[in-house]
Structures are given as structure tokens and as C-alpha cells.
Image (cartoon, rainbow, N blue to C red; front, side, top):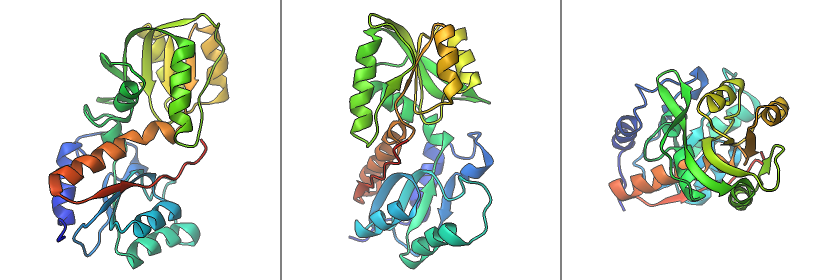
Length: 259
């Protein structure tokens, strides 16, 4: 097995995910964050870069790590302590790191919210969670008991080390217009957007306590299915795509946070 050049894989990902054109928060630093000597012989996908996921990649024989949350997610930090330990692990084991945040969330084929919708039996019809020029999430019509939707999401979340909970709702409530924004997708802005679009059920990973209080008074139910769980699907799909395109094997490194 000869592998594929990191530069070729990175160029393909940059174009596929529209990394340069997609707006994002500064700490995302989308694209290659750490180079290696290469070539890429096996790809490991994970939600977050951490000592645990880097060691998991090394143990799996992978020398490229593809993540949603990269090295700089906590902001500008000195190379000391755990931050230095992560960088040292990558360098010592010659593991390249590629990160894709909103370019992944907004992707029309590999987006986390899109894939989550389909995983629980929903079909998106429009975009949701507007950020500058992109939609980070999806929404669509439906006619399903909200309790059933919660149950499906709970099964999904538990398969990734978490669980799903919902804000106050009646047992017989039905969902007729839903929206999904993965990760930390509950905010004043997404709640306002949901109300403006007539959404009655908002699905996300996590949100502040006040959001559940406000939701009840606005006729909205919010289902919180876990930040980690709701963002496992995109990196897996992209890694599988890269495996098919470049002929290198891939694996997923599970590292649930409980959130």
C-alpha cells in the first residue's frame, strides 16, 4: 500500500467543502492544521482532536486525522501543557491533521444536520441556522409524534455515549415543521429563526438553560441530543468518501464527551 499525498487529499477537501469560500469563526482554522512527511496510508475520523483521538488514530495505524473541532477551538493558546502534548503526539507519530467546521456543517451532501435528519427518518426541504452567507442546518415538513422523534434521537444519541432530552411538551404533541442545527445550535438567533419559519420542533446538540424556558412560552419544543453525538456523522461520511476516492482505508475514533 503506497498511500496518497496529503497535498492531493487536502486540495480535494478544500474544493469539495469550499473551505476558502465558507465563512467561519476564527478559531476554526479550516484545512490542514498540521502537515506530516506522508504519504497518507490510513485516515482516522473523529469529532474532536484530543490526546485520546490522536492516540486512537496511532493505535489504528492511521497517519491522517480528520476532525470537526481542531487544535485551536479553545482560541489562541501557548504551546504548553495539554495543548503542547497534543501537538507533540501528532509530530512524534507523523500524523497529519485536517479540520473542517462550518464548511462541513453547511455541505449539501456531508453536512451534520442533513445526515442526522436522514438518520432519524426526516427529509430536509430547506436550509436553517443562517450564518452570514451559509445555512448551517436544515428544516422541513413532517407529521410525527414529537415523543417518537425524541425516542429516535435518544436511541441515536445513546449509540454515541449520550442521550436526548426535550423541553416541556404534552404527550400527544405532533411535530409538523422541524429544524436541525447540530452541535451548539440553540441560540437566541436560531430560536428566532425557527419561530419566523413556523418551526415547532428544534433539534440540536446542546443549548443554554434559558432556551428551554423560552421554548415552552413560544410554543416550541427543543430536543437536545448531544453536541458530540449530533456531529459524528459528517466526519465519518467525508472519511468514507476519501477512502473511495484515494483508495486508502479509514476508521472512526469514538471519543464521547458526554455532552
